[in-house]
Image 1 (cartoon, rainbow, N blue to C red):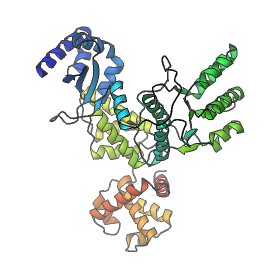
Image 2 (cartoon, rainbow, N blue to C red; image 1 turned 30 degrees about the horizontal axis):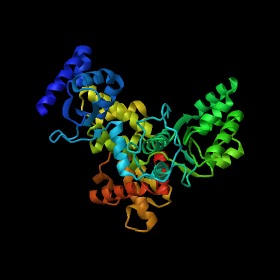
Image 3 (cartoon, rainbow, N blue to C red; image 1 turned 45 degrees about the vertical axis):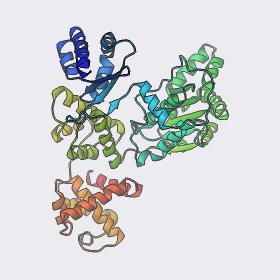
Image 4 (cartoon, helix red, strand yellow; image 1 turned 90 degrees about the vertical axis):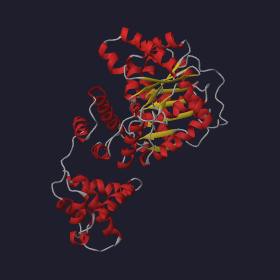
Length: 462
């Protein structure tokens, strides 16, 4: 059976080689191995998710034709990302049909019953790559993600209507909003789910107004079961757009249809939005997504490692998580660049390569030259004497200052943990490591400590 599969895939490769340049074939298709062909599903092993996504974007038409010609009509394609070369184990990127079946088995259907009109020819405008599976959970997004999960099971029938997701650029608002929409679309085949940016909504309204088709515009939006409007802040100052959206909002909300809005600020900070709209924005749940903290940044990197079939050392993970701090988008940009370099040049992803890539995306701030500067800044911030931190006092405030001094001593200087511990009261490497772990773990759930650490870090790096 495996021999027959190998022969068939070799025929596919011959077709690909005849229709592609030698470089394109050798780079993207020569390394692929066929793993299995069962129940009409062909599984191909690739080196990373980057390879799968690149093929999907650039060569899927010619690959599909070759597969259908050799394996027959109706053949579905899946990729498996190689993680363990010895066993061949790794995550599988399933076809949409397989993914839907998995989701339906994992989650029970709610009592939500959308309109019976089929969704035929209804374009959701959702980004299919933005799913709950690819949205890494963490403390900065916990509330919004939990609400989104509940909504996806019972859209319009929870207390979270509307769901108002807000936060800075690149923190994952659009990803989460699309993930909710994609989950609803999978679990409720008849639901009409629509994603639209505020700017697109504005342009559609203007066209409808100019063509005297406002009733058609309203009828379309009032037929939607789940309406997702991204970047609602761009409605500011647009009286006609706001007035029309107000009526759509009222109709959907009263009909127990779901509204999901994203914004770069909380409702109380919005300017030039009518009070009656602002009041309705607050009816459901306003959930902030903060910029990713250190732990979430590490989790995102680890998640991408698993999905893309790559290995990053702890040194590289720590370096990226330390310096790429502003947004998930920046982290994804760094990883995409690293994957491209590693795939195309066959260069190992080491610290040197990471530093080259990161320096093109964010400014790498110089480390403090001396641990004395760190100790001084921590002592000043917590209003504790340097000698007290170095001593044996174990009050809560002094202990926290001591832990933070060791944490930042490791992060912002070139000193080893042993050197940090030795300088701060002749403590051991194990003690310094314990302090670093305490601060790292507590920052994952304590916004006050995160603020303290960031203020000290900012003071040192001015």
